Length: 399
Image (tube, rainbow, N blue to C red; front, side, top):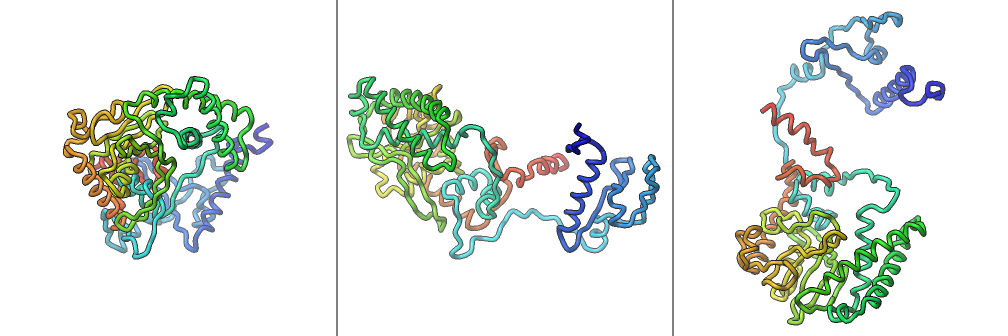
């Protein structure tokens, strides 16, 4: 049935027709096309494909000759031709053209993050505009679910404080969360070309209700009183000539007037480890704290809010201890492992300013090397094939 229907891979004839179609496309792809093949693999002689016969005039022999023997004319490979005509030069090209005066780049904090992790990632993705094809999902992906959670927590915390949260009875809290969930789903649906089905909305509503309840139960135990003064706040600034836009998930104000900056995270791996390093791979909160905050002394702490059914916690650093559950102050011994060179809040802010500015200067200078600390950091790289890591490993093995 597959052969009769000429399904892919059903027969040699189907594959031959497919191969000839691909060949015709390649031959029409440029004014001049050079075809080459390997003549040997170790000590084994290789033959060119019979498909090349009509292109380069090879004698592929009698079609009934199943031995596949044919005459290969005296013809040098492309590499031999190049080697005989010019001197080959090998060099490590890791610099792209510097940013021209007035040239702008999109990407914001994502651009700075990619540059910190691997300069080539930032160059291919944000200067050349390369990106991966989107994968169709039968249900909501993690990004969409994260957006929904942001909308729910934004809806709940608008014009509320820790006192409001703690004063709510269980039923009142459930009702307030349910209203925030319904509003979030309506807003999210309005942004889609094809709205979620009623069944999927119901399932997502249940998930969001459970997740938000767990998180708010956790927040009700925070040691310091606070009120939420901003949600999803957008800020635009320029860093060494690189335009950056920030969207802060939440800003809390403490009783003494100082602020806490919070960024919601739903992944299992949430860490502030890079904040003490030269290359900051999670730059959003440090950018705001060190470069966008008008009054650095008015900032008390920055933290990720890890919102998960299996783990609700804060991950960050504060000017002192006791501002958020299990978030150390910069002057505590617990902070020395991640921040060995920054013993005060002023030291930390200065480190963030200098490190982020250095990364921005790299972008302006065109630094685009395939350089990274840990290959696992590239797990979510949209342009991973362009980094050619397999070839890189092969070269290292040879050297």
